[in-house]
Amino acid sequence: MSQLTHFDQAGNAIMVDISAKEKSHRVAVASGKIKMSPEAFAAVVSGSSKKGDVLGIARIAGIMGAKKTPELIPLCHLIEIEKAAVEFECQNNTVTVTCTVKTTGKTGVEMEALIGVSTALLTIYDMCKAVDKHMEICEIHVVEKLGGKSNG
Image 1 (cartoon, helix red, strand yellow):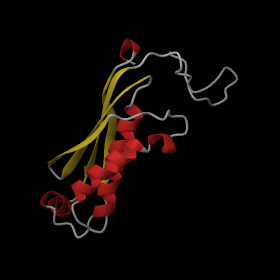
Image 2 (cartoon, rainbow, N blue to C red):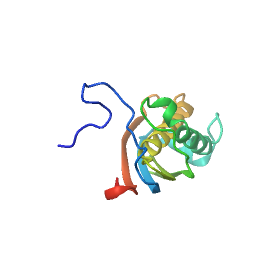
Image 3 (cartoon, rainbow, N blue to C red):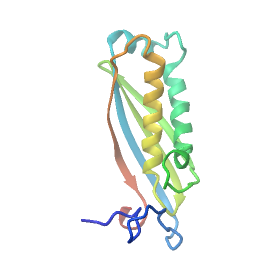
Image 4 (spheres, one colour):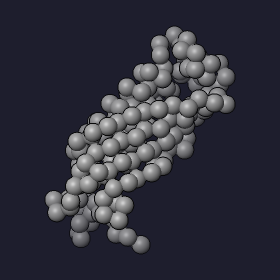
């Protein structure tokens, strides 16, 4: 089993030292879903929600979330994000959100992709909760991570 990297030998929480690592092109893709009632889904897909363009606002929120990751996750490094994109697939009363984040740096961007997805999903929930109080956010996970030594 690999050793946890965010703790020193005494068990204290630390930020990982990446100073000796080489920069490389890094990409992370994360995905998640929100399941909702047919009424809420129809409003999202048609753009007829009383709160406005749900997917457009969720896209911006997801990008902003990715950019704010080090402010939310205590031991994350501040990373220069070169691209953050949020895409949606809508079918069967479910919106699937995918966030892709790219950088050229010393550490990966999977946390940024996960925060981007989570923020977009939470925004959809917030904008639709008046119509459906029983939405389910699920299946948030890293789909792909590329770059770094040994694909790390």
